[in-house]
Length: 288
Image 1 (cartoon, one colour):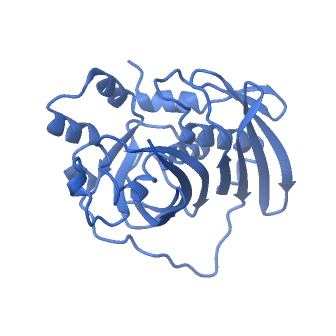
Image 2: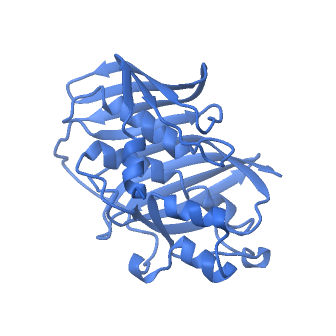
């Protein structure tokens, strides 16, 4: 069986079909829509393929416009907006079956030495990831055994995810819960040494758990879902180099949910407590 990390690297390896036009695979899954992190990661690969290799990504801003269909290829069209002395800007449009489903603007920055530094530390002390159970282990403990479909999904999961707080399974367990969540994550296998692959893999992962912070005060994360959820937009700022196949802490919070939309913010740290990435996303929440 192919290692899920290898499958993720293959998923991010786009086919170039014309100048500044790329095609990405979309695996046939049982999901209603293509996972947003996949589209964001592939779009960022397309942008990166048209830039000089000495300028890493420093930010991206994206909108999810329509749900993508699993199993149908996605074409990424890149516009070369600007090539400056220090910054490079690219705009990417994702098209599936003739319809725009996603767009992204990414900025690349030639590394330079800053005159000062500061950062906020993680919001709290957390246990080491090795001391925490995987999501699959928590589900097996609660359910006794995973249903076959969930077992297959767990085996295909490209990231090891470990929640700092035990998962809530019952409605009475969410009462009084703050809209905060924290997880340790890393790819389940090596991702190679291309920095762009690690950046795009982490972009993929950043969409996996961020909206949990919105749901935590309302419903159990792993109980029956009462809401249809969809990512509306996504923004990221990359502060320091990192590897997505090494443990990183994703500290998440939701400052507000109103009008059918919930806002979530995330800060990503390495094991030494250095902030690597900042993330902001808004999601749509409609009662089922």
